[in-house]
Amino acid sequence: MLLVTCAIILNNQNKVLACQRSANMHLPLKWEFPGGKMEENETAEDCLIREIKEELNIEIQILEQKIANDHHYSDKSIRLIPFICRHLSGEISLKEHKDFRWLDKSNLLDLDWAEADLPILNEYLQANCNQP
Image: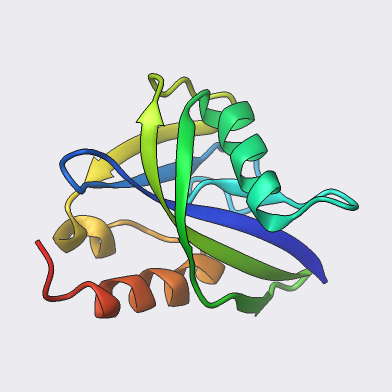
């Protein structure tokens, strides 16, 4: 099983970052929380900070780890490990993704999400339903 981290990144307006996978990636054009595969002897936190810097060129602060989701695609199985994060600095520069959006929580379900991200998104929305 591949260990993969992902970040639910909030900006100063409490909007959530969603990233669209490029056309040549696995699950083309699906939306996801950014992150990536853990390397050997790497913690989930170190992986996430590294991946976000590599893929988006921004700095984040990890606030909280959430419940992981095991998902089985036809060609692989992943354990997606989510974290709530705060955008600290830097302007987003896409290295692998096609597009990104900062969205209010109420608009997140309008996107076509990767299957593994959906339980994480739903849990986040349920846990934060009473917050602006």
